[in-house]
Amino acid sequence: MKKKLKDFCNSINIEYVGIAPAEPYYDFEKVWRKQIERGYISGFEEKDIQKRVHPNLTLEGSQSVIVCLFPYYIGEFPEANLTKSAYSIDYHLIVQDKLELIASFLKANIDNFEYKSFVDTGPFSDRYLAYKAGLGFWGINNNLITDKYGSYVFIGYILNNYPFKPDKPMERTCYKCFNCVRKCPGQCIIGDFTINPLKCKSYITQKKKDLNPSDKDILKKHSLIWGCDVCQDVCPHNKEAKETTIKEFKENILYYLDYEELNQISNKEFIRRYHDRSFSWRGKGVLKRNHEIINDISGENTDNA
Image (cartoon, rainbow, N blue to C red; front, side, top):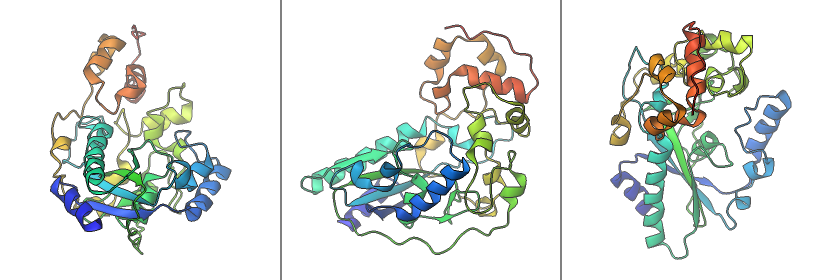
């Protein structure tokens, strides 16, 4: 059945698929508790530690986790002010559709197949599961890295009740050149394969609350108004990263948001235009604010409904 699964994934253009065990993740728990002790949590993560560690709390009777990688790199756009992961239609939508295709195939081939699929929304660490499934290795910048696509990959997974045999993690790490540590706008990369997300520019571009002077200084160090690619751009593992073969990531490309547009349109119009983009969930106000800080623009209060 595992070969049938991988063959089916390949048939829908998913190259990287592996199996992580659905067992208590005690090694992850140690790392996560240390992050909590240091205050290095963003608040976006699952708050119940037990749910992050025990798969059975999410799906009773779970026996394995199917993990897939979805490369998204399409080349360089020097004038971009959005992160590379936001160029296409919202990756949550693209990846979720593909996970559901996999689940439908398995339901048709496995009696009483039960599952729950996640894209950035589950209780677990996506990168940890991909590592456990043997799909990549850790970078100092806390990214999962692959040989073919570097770290430019999205991760989706299917927690399920079928006993697929787990794959083995790779016994290697990145080059440890520390380019990412030196170049990070917020100096958030600790150097021990963890980060302080509160100083990550990508996190700061998504903050709804008023930004403090330190946040603003970090924003001004790079031109992106949404996300941050610096630790990936300077990574030698990404130097020869191949472009994605998944067509959905090469269509409907948008890499720049104009300030005048954001300033003139209403919130409703913003949602109408960009509801299917990954940057839309925070609303236009956050993007407009980031634009103003980075480009030293005096803002106008035009956030009408």
